[in-house]
Image (cartoon, rainbow, N blue to C red; front, top):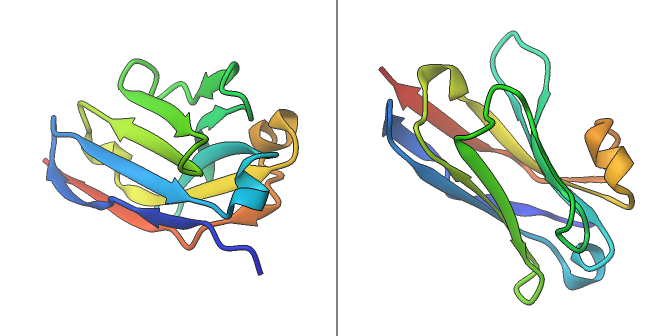
Length: 123
């Protein structure tokens, strides 16, 4: 079973920063669009950011635009999510996702998921 492995979550004060990382097997990373989703207790899962296979297309959820940055290092099979100016409402479990098409990532139809990493922002 394909595993995406996230890291970098934790507890941070409002206004602080965190960087999440997600490593995927090379056979998956090289042909997949990647993305980050999050789910807070009692809320639906939402797209945080997505990046196409080559990195030429990027989308962000409205609530994180201007604060979060997604990037990928194809040599390391890793996608990153740099989160700045964190707010308490960013508190959620963040999931890495991979899909064969960029449209699928945007539509929450990822084929592969990580186990999730908790991000908690205190006020």
